[in-house]
Length: 195
Image (cartoon, rainbow, N blue to C red; front, top):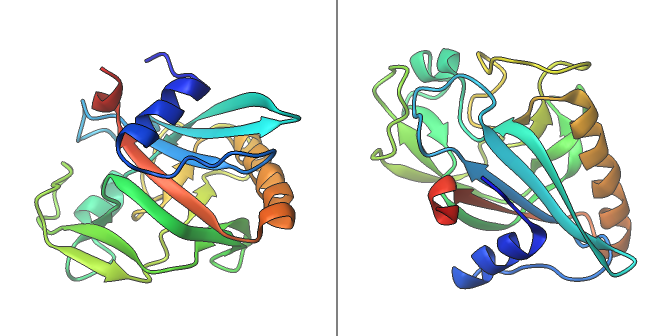
């Protein structure tokens, strides 16, 4: 999948979503791999599209937009494992503390999730939806290096595989928060949006 700043911008505008302009006004965009609902790997893409001195920039990080198999088969919620649905969630995150352990993008406003109720390894997108504060954060896996398998790193969070990529994201997020306020919109697309 070949992604560009302009392609992402057009994808968001085509769906009626907001695309943020201005230096370091970050567009945080996940692209879920629609081809493998059983994957337990970081097979999705987390994009950061922004401008620096008027020049378009795009960073792409390997991530997961889905819970790992551990939490699919052992749901942390009695209603089922949380799956973030496709769409744009305005002001979803702020710079804060992930589980009180380290700085990350943490849920700031109620969000919609789909509940996968059947406790098997395959993602089920047909479950009931809920809205609320579920701790759907954006964080890293291991504190150093690259993590290969999701396992129990995500119960519904958006998780970045490479610690260095995550550190770059947080550096940009702090710049953006100082300029525009500590509030970040997240847009989740499907790989089918680019086929």
